[in-house]
Length: 302
Ligand code: SF4
Image (tube, protein in one colour):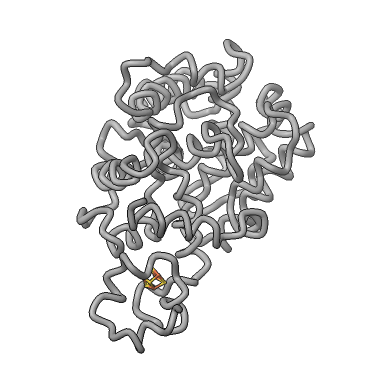
């Protein structure tokens, strides 16, 4: 077994999934039992999953509460109308303001007019010849962008092109077509496609074709353990890391994402050598920060 696989399997076994979920936006999908609610909760939660976890979790909580007051995420989307526009007046996060939330609800309402679920729609966009699911994601973003433009008049901001929509809304629908890592959408795909905890496995797409959701933690730790030399956290870097993971887990390369991300989010990895932390870190044999340390500095692991 390769050193990389031993290290990453060790890390996965060390991270307690159930306890860690509480500090992860996927918890909002687990709040529901109906897959129709779960997929929309996951979509909305992933959209706001940027910046500090401690800052975005309360905002997602308020979004979910507003949905719950309307029967849950699925009913809230299906029945969303002009009468509901004011519900988001108190909701904002960074560049996302009330009109952005209103328009995204309307956009997914349009998706559900023609499909039983968001998942069945996404599955219809997948083509077996796609190299990875970024092709599917690109088609998804193109369609969502078109739907948003077509519904813009109802939202009170008539436009003829996606470029004219508010900046905050446009950031909801970033596409991998322009080389962005699209961390939030890749994370959603992981949640919806992978079938083992903490992921939900609701969408029938190949896990082998997922791309790692590249946040600052995953990117930095991946650099430290030699998974990529790419300096920018873009799609190229995400694909390079995923390709490395594919060599040890071809059917499910991003099974390690949750553990890698939370090694950073938790503060357990300080991205620098720390005797007490690094000696018990499963990645220590690969990590650039433990290279050149004397055995006594690395601690007695026997
Ligand atoms: S710096 Fe230490 S804790 Fe972080 S990955 Fe390297 S060995 Fe592990």
